[in-house]
Length: 90
Image (cartoon, rainbow, N blue to C red; front, side):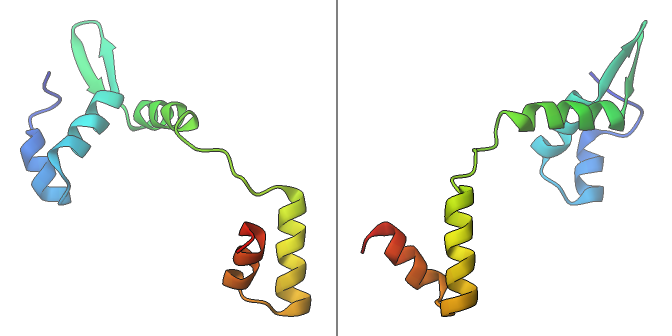
């Protein structure tokens, strides 16, 4: 499916991006208008954000760990490596 007159390869070279990146972006942003196909940056962004929600790992940083690390950094002036070793029990 071609969008406009510029080839994907020309866009790849112009933006110095890998072909798959451009191809994925165009697929995310395609809107079918009767018999015409149009690219929409807003539609591509909405699709990207919807897919991204499921790909992000939840944080392991609990409020308790956050408070503990912050206190150790401020009060004891320990390095992150020292705090990490303590939390890991090394």
